[in-house]
Length: 277
Length: 185
Image 1 (tube, each protein chain N blue to C red):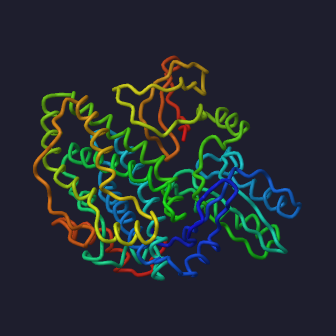
Image 2 (cartoon, rainbow over the protein chains, first blue to last red):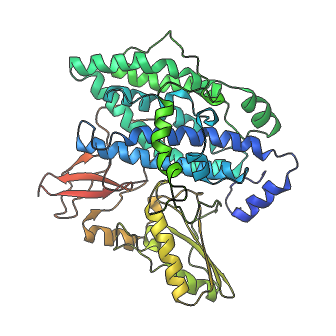
Image 3 (cartoon, helix red, strand yellow):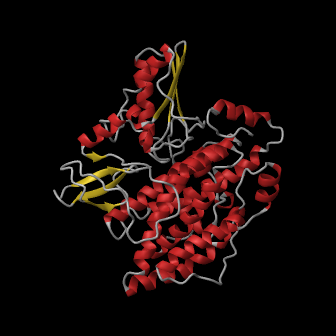
């Protein structure tokens, strides 16, 4: 998997499969674990955002959140297909036939939609996080992760612009919009910390052993804080400090509403296995 | 995600490749190039830059396409249409691969494609939107988008997102007509 995407170095699925089969210093299962995290983040957030279609404050926003959810589905499909290749599972196997402890999304992605302000604050945090992540993952030594990131980063940049514009509108809008967005910041921000935690998979396996497959989450905190701080400053909102949620999503520990989300997302595939339309 | 007949495959390609040089592959390219975008039927996948390569050995054809946006559902319809067209032309085995890298950009849209878009009533992309620091003003500045109905540059963005992933919604201040704008990407 040492081949990087460069001008003139075409990489075909056959070559990737060959390199995966080669083994050697490569531990595909750990790369798959990492891809699974990123895929779960995108898929679960997409499922949450889909709820807003026909419920957002204005029709343009129905379309915006629906479009963002569609981009995220695309990212999830790529990551989950790649992850599943290590275990002989399809994207659908991973999406529909895993139980709660097997999911690896960070908890912020699964947080309840709340009111529109909560959804926007969650979107604000994760789109700025994903932009920093993907803009570095394009240099991953794993060419498939790098390719998915190169595609995703352009889309996430647009999501980032969308959420930043809303933070400004809500922060500088009416007394009520400002009150609500500040409450949402207080509620959502404790879950931001988990996004930037390193762990054994990242440190020992993906960076030390596999020479920079993953992006070290701790390195993203500073650029994230800087950009997010600038938007919040301009929106005249306070940067939340203090409370930090315990997290654990990467280890399969999830929040209260997650089981209900999974039930809704998985019920059709489980009740009618192999259903098509 | 249920019933995806052809799961996403991965490969990375280096540059925007022209029409293949060898005769057999070029014939397959030309056939694939007749497939149109199901959402914007005036555009072929070659106009869009979605068609990336074609190669033929014997009666087997391999076509590479790239999605415009990661989640674009049109890619499945396009894949099916390519298989139908090539099988109809006698190829025994047709493989369609999705390539993710390099990522699609509106720079790959042909000049002819942009012209056809405008005639169809969709404002074509104006140039490449750079990925970089987020715009911080409450008004984001961009190139003037020309109304495809009356040609006025006096237009306003109604919604940053539109009826498909690749479009935004605009309205012309002069003729008052709303129109789609194919976003720079």
